[in-house]
Image 1 (cartoon, rainbow, N blue to C red):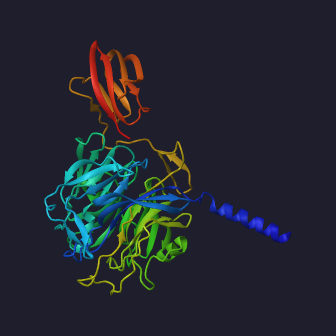
Image 2 (image 1 turned 60 degrees about the vertical axis):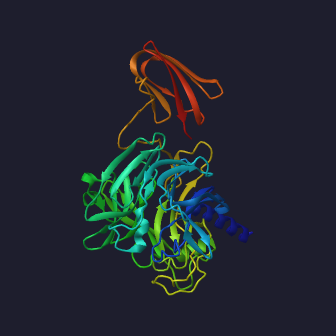
Image 3 (image 1 turned 120 degrees about the vertical axis):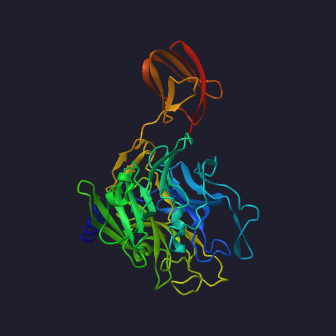
Length: 487
């Protein structure tokens, strides 16, 4: 009887301590890449390759599907987990004779910032970009992967650094790609090797380098930067850190503090005082215990690149398996719940399959490694919670689509300047006077009808993705206009 009482009490204590540390369902995406990227391209680690979707149930990956089989880089998920944004490279490689080789005739192919559905369908090229090859900004070849950086806060704007390492941060609207706006030009003696944004695009976590002294340091800042100056808005966490990345809610910073990046340090960011305090940490040894997988060779270690889950401040992604920053042994995409001490090996590559000395480039004839970069993670909180994010305590908070730089409305056409669609979710009647409108789907069925007196905002959030005809009468004028409702 006493033993049963003790067991019951222990169970209650465990339940109390665990709180909201339930297993998750969700979707992860990552780039499956390799080094050397091409047989003649040794010593330069480009994390570009195919895009893999990992479907997660109860903290286990139940399937891995290659959803983009051409060459891509730095996939990020939309806030609702339905789409993927990525850099799409025109120059292709193919595997033959044990090595990757450039495909003849693809050298002059164009490169794009693109989006697609989570299943790989409906690929759309938003804007043409340059190939992020070697840059004068980069003093070390193995840092070339810092050239391609983007992020997708809540809403319709994707933020990206214009390749190649221009220090120009742009944003582009996925619904209206012609709206491609310069957010800031941060050209100076400092440049941002890597950066991430919170879901409201108000905060950034950056890894910076000073080009004059070659020092790498971390920064957490308001976004956009004040006067386009990194130093005027940067709050540096304790010591010099690498790969600083901000959580979705902007309340935490993850970074490495030197060495082989064995440990990740989580700092809590107090925005009112602009200070950060060391809050938590975990090591690769912890992750091996939490996943049950061997992630690095015994006696070795190493990690690189930190990215946070798109809708949770508990989960952070790490690229695990690098040997002293050189991907000789390959790497894994590992999602880490630093709060509840859980981890998921999203990629499950087999990276430690060769013998080589640590800290040098692999031998000339060494076959390519099997790698995965950290990628992105979207957690499924259940129906009705698609546009919510989770704080460190497991509380779900709503996040409306945002436009932090400016509020811009889309003209339906020059023939109907008095009517506009706002953010794809509502129609704006911009003039005073009576109006009437109806919306008809592609099958000719009327799905919405409204009458009123302008100016007015007419909600159309219930429309399914597709093409619609808007029949409107505004100020005695008739208009027939087509609109597209994206996912």
